[in-house]
Length: 212
Image 1: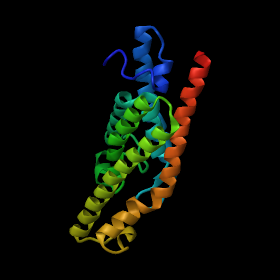
Image 2: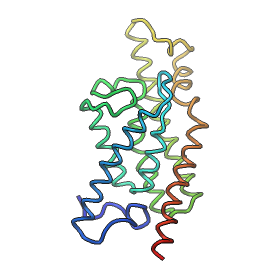
Image 3: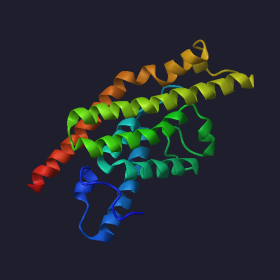
């Protein structure tokens, strides 16, 4: 692990201590705290099916904005590893079998999302408009993953020939995937991305005022 995996343009980069050993410890601690934040956010939810509405996408955007893309990616990798090994950090539990759940596509989609949000944050330098637009684009990428994976899972369930769950009774598979993975989230996620951008930009502005 490199001594510094973020830049001074991020909130964490501006907070890193001067001592080399402390810089490394701070970054490791930030990654662990990021996974805790994601786990907590997974439980703040509206338990609709097949994909619960949570605040995790906002937390992912904030993680990318605060840490930058490298540490953001490390955080998501650790979070996914925690969940797949059985820790109940996902919205409906954990374990390797969660790969076959309708919502796992979003979890996969948060990987490119946090990278895009982190890259944008490192370039935006706290400017709210590019931050917000970049986070919205990053969120849209996660929706692509969520939609595609829900479509795959729905097709697997239908192909199995067993009794269909209620959420699959809404028409053809494309319609079901759209209604389950995209349509209920559009407005809320736009608001969450704007809030995430305001949070990151506000934190950077506060740190700069204190530094001066």
